[in-house]
Image (cartoon, rainbow, N blue to C red; front, side):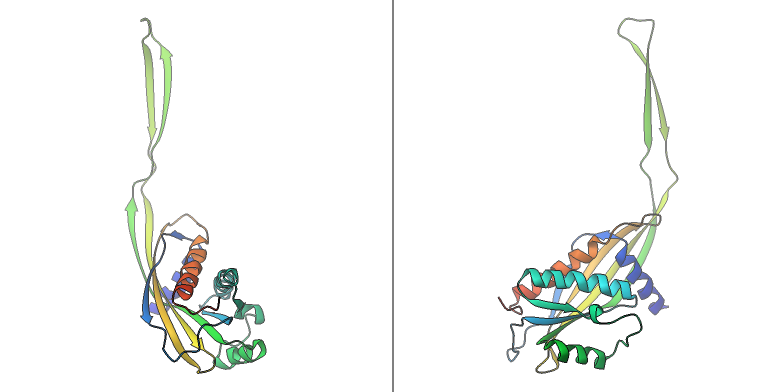
Amino acid sequence: MIFRILIIATALFLAACSAGPQVTRVQDLSETADAPYDNVLVVSLFELFDMRRYFEDYIVEELESRGVRAVASTSLMNTKTPVSRQTFLSMVESLDSDAVLVTQLVNARSTGKMVDMNPEVTYKASPSYYYNVWNVEQAEYIEPQGLEFTHNIVLATQLFSVRDLEPVWAIESNSKIKMAFDKRGDISVIAVEAKAIANHLSRDGLLAP
């Protein structure tokens, strides 16, 4: 059941809008790490291939805007390529990457509630028999209540050193996404998440200037 919820939440992540994520550092940069890095393989471990591709492309865009060479793993594979350690190690070898950035969905919780919809009000005015006095008719249409979902999505991101094959830094980001059941929304939340991750990488000194 939990696995099914995570799959649904991944899809919702593509079709919703949210405020900026709350980011918590769960592993400080190791003193022995060979940071900063300038050649990063970007990997996301989501159930949906399109989700992985969208997310990795946004991360790559953010890293490249900061002068770092970055490659999305999905640009080197298709839906039939095994998502395995060996697949990514082969990419690292061919790209001569010095770090691997891995993001995955680790938790999702959804709640729903009925909300009042905005009423539609129209006015019709007509003159009366009295000077400067008007008759005004007001018509108000109120839609039935709608169902609104709130999704709390937690992403875990780790940066691995290729030299040590160990994680040297990690964060978790918590996003609250609100979406009406009949609205598709947009994918702006992915761009917001990608920017937050890149900002924290830069702030903590992991990206080569």
